[in-house]
Amino acid sequence: DADVTQTPRNRITKTGKRIMLECSQTKGHDRMYWYRQDPGLGLRLIYYSFDVKDINKGEISDGYSVSRQAQAKFSLSLESAIPNQTALYFCATGKEDGKLFFGSGTQLSVL
Amino acid sequence: GESVGLHLPTLSVQEGDNSIINCAYSNSASDYFIWYKQESGKGPQFIIDIRSNMDKRQGQRVTVLLNKTVKHLSLQIAATQPGDSAVYFCAEKRYGNNRLAFGKGNQVVVIP
Image 1: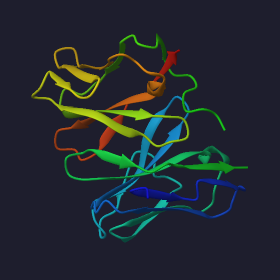
Image 2 (image 1 turned 30 degrees about the horizontal axis):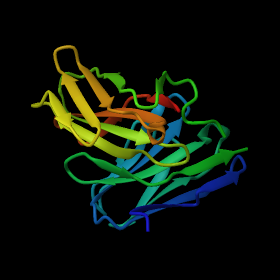
Image 3 (image 1 turned 90 degrees about the vertical axis):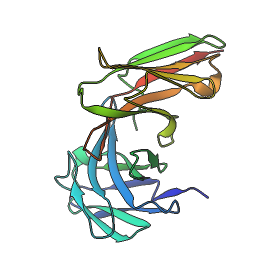
């Protein structure tokens, strides 16, 4: 089984819809992250959490929200999806040393 | 959807040759660096890391070199194999900052 599991793997939605992407991990890491990947732009940080009571904005948090339901679960929500949020989304976990472990990604398309 | 590798610098290398992938970083306060490999349809996978108190670190078929004077990082892959075809990202962590900053990536295509 994957250490970092993202669901769904693919999602197509319409503009204005609310959507949630989920992430769970079995690595026992305290730190969890949500990244967005667009062609040619690399990985950009949306939100991150260092423990259950900690939530921090990344470089592109506008239009997104997160919930850290447990040490192992970190979900990303788009309250009202828009087409420029079409992207590949990655969840990652890590420890204090900075090394991150990524899930397989969720491809989101907003029509 | 579009490939992750579109619009990226591309290195084409013959199978069996050595590959060198370069990365420039901007912040002299960065103290930790990582190389990730991303195959099509998968998430980035850790390859090797290096701290700023080192110039070189070797793994299995991979070597990372760090030149702090010119803020340059490179990944060398020995005897490149078809399975090495992927997008490679460098990432840096700045001292006192808990977040990684990623480069835009380099596409490596291995020619059989």
